[in-house]
Image: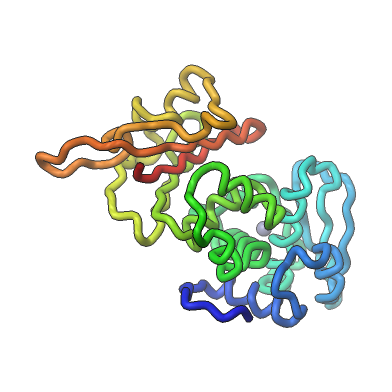
Length: 266
Ligand SMILES: [Zn+2]
């Protein structure tokens, strides 16, 4: 392991991911194609068209086969689906002979069944080991460009990179996940000091970029991805506190109709 002064509190699933990386002799998961890693763990790997699901693992008489939907458009998403199934292989294959995963399962981050959350935690740590991820963030200014670079560096989606940043990044941020103009969940990084006004299934606040996106279909991209907002647009002000400037980066996943708003102080 790379020596570091930063330590992370890891969940059981994340520790399992680290153990598997160690067992494969990998410091950096991008060194080998994930299909080869899976074969090295003694599971079969194949890609073929699957209807209504992104991946599955079938275990019969001690042998497991992981199948990933060949119609998944993006390499990053395919990698995430494969790492998620590998997580099921390492942690859950003795519990279920068949596990099938839809898009919904791959988005089970802070909601959803415990085994889906575990498989996603495994995948996130496996593809972006916390220590390595933190090192990649060091001495870099937070913003959409950094998320872009991290996603490319680790061959993951921007969504996956943002979620990892909350846990293992070097700057306080808070993220809010919305679907169909409704807030579903939020997650602050441990050092984010502000209180977010959140009511599940309510629309995002009217001053937010997310609200603008859902109501006017306006999507900011490129240099405009980072938008100026007021602190009070998302966050609670103390009595007598003057409003101040914050940023919001609202990532829109068009094909799934969800947004992730990243909020941080200017
Ligand atoms: Zn799953």
